[in-house]
Length: 173
Figure (spheres, rainbow, N blue to C red):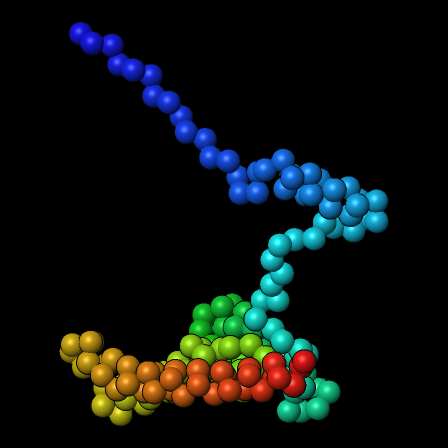
């Protein structure tokens, strides 16, 4: 039998592995340690936020945050009571508070919440459709009114966010 040749491993050199690049990184690290700061990184990312968070529509009162907190308390109470109308109140409070915060940030160009905001009218139409017409035997028919509404809302909200973000970027400079 023929002997199997040992496999050779290939190793890649990391990018910037020239002696000059390594020396420059080492110098930057040493200088940063002497100053007591971090070494500069090659990429800085602001996680999609530009400028300050937009002010609430209720002035300085965090009403939306209180609604979300009250909804969480109702959700815990619904878990203890095993459901009932408390869970419906909890979902409604959380949805209203979350929608207000998301819409405020989205419409001002601070952060995009396109998918969540486009789902809200689609879910409302779906609930009305199921209550008025009833749940069809083929559940795929439940998606018939929802998909076009979601698509139209998504397109309009995305377009508005791009315009608002551009205005915010120009104003921020």
